[in-house]
Length: 92
Image (cartoon, rainbow, N blue to C red):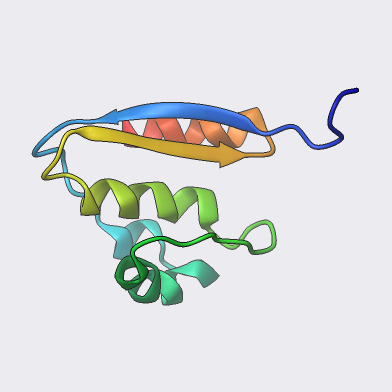
């Protein structure tokens, strides 16, 4: 039996000393921008919000900024492949 909701995954490599993203510019006007400090300080979070709030636009660059001093991967999930590809291209 197939699940009714598919999730698309992409792994984006983050290298040491990666370019820092300007989250204020990227997130200007997006509702999730007001929550960035809380998300940053929490350590681990599950973000659930309506479409158009900036989850896919802001959260991957935030994580990339936080882990830029280490080598690792950022995993982005979204119900639509186009959203994941757009987030991956912004991080690459």
